[in-house]
Image (cartoon, rainbow, N blue to C red; front, top):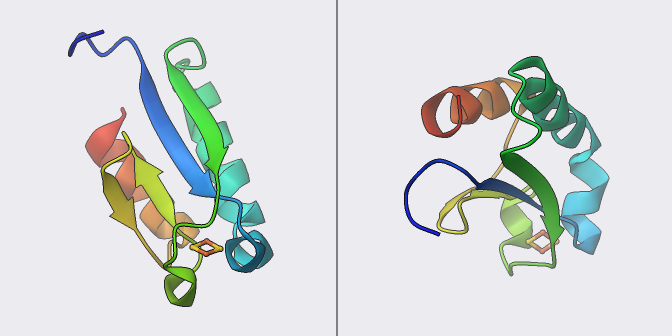
Length: 84
Ligand code: FES
C-alpha cells in the first residue's frame, strides 16, 4: 500500500450503456499499458454501472478520478497525466 506507484488501476465501466462505447478505449488503455511496459504495475479492470450512463463511456483512474465521454484521444491524455 502507499504511494509507491506500485499499483495503479484504470477502471472502465462495463455497465450496459458504457459497454456499447467502450471497446475502443478499453483496447487503447491496454495497449498503452503494454507499450509502456507497465503491465506488472497497472491494472485495467472493469467496474459496474456508475450511474453516469448519460456520459458513457466512463473511466475512473485510481478509483477517484472519473471522466465521461472518453475518446481514444482522452484515453491517451489520461494515461499520460496519471499513469505514465
Ligand atoms: S453503464 Fe456506465 S455509467 Fe452506467
